[in-house]
Length: 272
Image (cartoon, rainbow, N blue to C red):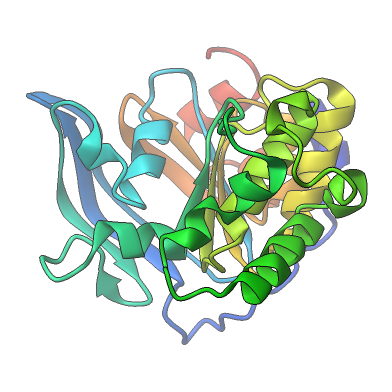
């Protein structure tokens, strides 16, 4: 098939969810539109807890739009609206009573390019999401910032310059800082939208290792164009094409014995 087979894990590591349990997150006939254009078409997907889930497919296939529907970022895009449901622990996140701000503390997101706040220190960047809560005292705030930086494998590199500008960090460090900021409010799900596309190979490896480690505590959903990356770190993979979710399943199965000819054509490089 393809070279990525040598990078596949030998077995999928089971997460906390059992087959009888609710998925941590799920979509039910979800469609996402920009005005009259439908970017995502009727996607139903389950995401088990404590696993890494990869979304793959060619540019413009709808996978990043789909990702943004999972924490209601799509609705703040000009013309963005959805139909269908997105469920977090069985509850519809688009229900009228659900606060989008509160939801985004439970479903954190890291974007393709590191989005550090240039006027804030390293500490301030991580604490930004926590300060919204208004109930976090200074001591607890410092503890949670340190914990998030440790989880993002960044603490040892920045502990002596927490109050320096975040813009002095390298690109890879800035991306890990963004991950720390997403982790600080203790979310249940972390969304990663091509988090390594602008990074060098060493920084990419650090992020991949981090994603694989973080699934012990979080459900990770990652959009990636890098099929080797999907093969290395994910437990399940879903292939998107022209707004449709074509195929989903265990990563080893998708890469070695895909059921759909379109999936096989994409992972073998015949298109995309």
